Image 1 (cartoon, rainbow, N blue to C red):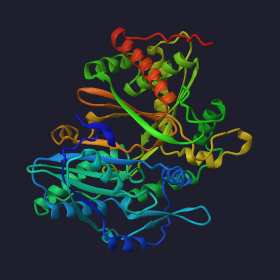
Image 2 (cartoon, rainbow, N blue to C red):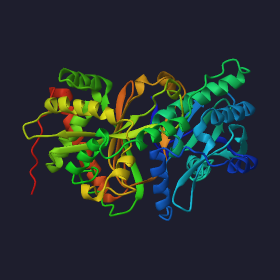
Image 3 (cartoon, rainbow, N blue to C red):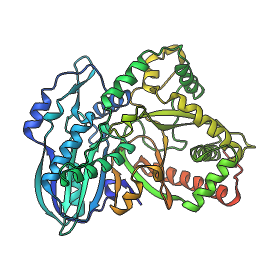
Image 4 (cartoon, rainbow, N blue to C red):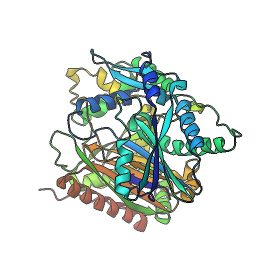
Amino acid sequence: MVAFGLFDDWHPEPGRLTTWTASPQSRVAVGRASAHEVGPSYQQEAYLRTVGRNSAAGLRVSRLCLISFDIAAAPDHPALTAAINAFLRRHDTFSSWFAREADGRIVRHVADPADIDFAATEYGQFTDVEALRERVEAETPGPFEWDCFSFGVIEREESFTMYAVVDHLHTDGVAQALSCMDLLLLYGNELSGGATPLPPVDGHIGYCARERTLNEQLTLESPPIRRWVDLLRRNDGDLPKFPLELGTGLGYTQGAQVTLPLFTETDALRFEQVCAEHGGRFLGGLFAALAAVEFELTGNQDYFGLTPANTRFLPGESGSVGWYTNLIPVAISVHPEDSFTSLVTVAQEAAERAKDLTDISLHRVLELVTPELGIRTRPGWAAPMLSYVDVRKMAGADMFDAINGGLYGSRASSGEVYMWVNRLPEVSTLTLLFPDTPQARAAVDRYVRTLIEVVTAVVTDGDHAVRVPALS
């Protein structure tokens, strides 16, 4: 089973650490790269602006994404150097760096991939896993530095662990899995003398150009913009918030994370069956459950949630590393007479309708709104989201067990509650990232207990009647 969690949950077997970072000559060459006509994606720009606004907060606002896997052999360091450089040159997101201009613009610079050169540094034996993790995390600069990614191996007598740490600016969950596959295949190609080269991929820069072109053509009168504005106005002019108090005030705080089993695969199949019998699918069922939970905890009859959609569209983007996601809205009305089986029907319909907005950036919507519309959402917003990934269907999923594969994130700051449901061959897990405050921990615990009660009733009884809360 592929492992998920925070850096603190990564427990590689200790050994001799070697890291790969940009050579000084490479940093100089890449730093000379000229400005490029294609800007960052809307998601990347908002991320960079958030990092800039909170740079004085005293904690890392940007999020690092780590992949890790084991190989039962001694590492070939020259082959690893070649594989890492081939990986970075293969995916054009790694050729980009971003600068803040005096007029507030964030400008992309694009280097010649041939200027990318990562070289090895040996750190010797590590016996303390915590010290090793700290070294690995400290090796990777922030997202306003070009080389906000690093690689390494932890070497033992007859095996080694390979890892890659990439700032979220250049990766997403799908890209993490793709990176694992690419690095394995590129390393194998080097060991075999180039016998099995990888096919080319379409780049992330082309995706950013496509996204910008499409969104810049939109106006307030465009139907997808009107849909977003209507949703926001129905929600008092703002994005959704976690339904319970988190105790964060106005600022960011350190993030905490918890991962727990949500379903056994037997229970997941039963949950999926109940959903299908009432016109739903697994994701629709999850949103139906969340809508029921929010109603039971707060009495809110208008559930409004966000979910990330994969924006890879061209055939060559299916294997491309980069941040290819967009948030799309799922809105559901809940009534006291509802049950899960009535909610799953409307939840699935809402999730299907939301796909029409996959290529529409919420950031563009907020650029277009005018004061009289009453939209209160401001730059730097945070909103809860639910991500669902059926890991069983990912290419190479079976391989992750054999190589002890894992996907992890740094303990970045968090102003909201983010949820991931990952369906694995034997278990579906629920991961929550939330502000590390006592109030948030209590709120998340209450929320999760209610969610478990709802989905357990669906699995056991085939339905769950929503409970009208006794609000004071």
